[in-house]
Structure formats: structure tokens, C-alpha cells
Image (tube, rainbow, N blue to C red):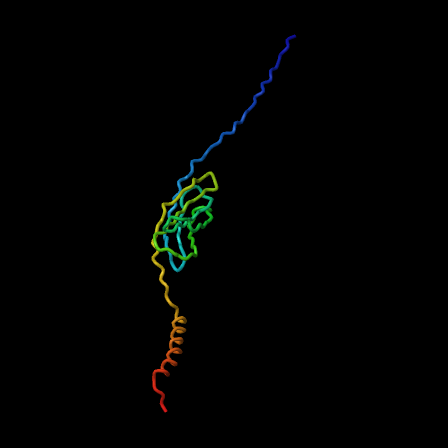
Length: 156
């Protein structure tokens, strides 16, 4: 009697996780329309390209002495066009600068910054309002009456 041994082959399959890093897609960040109009500093930025970017645009405004005077934020979800208006009075004339950057919240895109954008703000001039001129005029007439009576002879 022959015995047959039946061999059992056990195969183990090992799965080794491999991290695949996607190359971030190129992003373009451009700024336009920097300026100061009617008491508001304004700037616009456009973020295009990338792989459905998610994150935040950060706008920094610097005065002529290069001191940071304000910061504004705009959310990003895909290609984004953002405009910010900051209500501040320009107390100093000179060259102001907007600095805009994108900070990515995902691994599909990289952080990017736009070239700084500069613009001129002239010396603020004050214009008197009409009611102030009216008040000044009626005050002058009120003073003129008594002076006129003293200088002119009385009529009888």
C-alpha cells in the first residue's frame, strides 16, 4: 500500500501601501486694479489653473514707509476672482503696495504669490461743504450790521 502525501501550498499575498504624490498643478495668481478711490483701498486678484485649488487668498496693504496697515482674506474654492475693498483714509501721500498670496489647504496645489502691485496716492485736499459756507456767510452779515451802524451817521 502506497501512501500519497498531498502537499498543501499556502500563498500569502502581501499588500504594501505605496504613497503616490501627485505633482502639484501650476497655478497663476495675477493682481489688477490696485488703487485708492473715495476713501477705499481696492485690489483684485485672479487665481487660475491648478487642480481644483482650495485655500485662501491673503491681501496685505503697505503704506509708503513699507509698514503693514491692513490685511484682508478671500476664500478659494476652484478658480477664483476676488476683489477686496478696505475702508481707510490715506493720511500719507506716496506709493502704496498690495501684496497678494495664495495658501493651499490641499496637497494638490502649491502656495503661490503674485508680484507686488504699487500705486500712488496724492495729497488729500479738503473741500468745504455748502452748509459751512452758508454759516460763515450769515455770521459775516451779522457782524457787518453793527459795524455799519457805528460808521454811518444816523438819519433823522
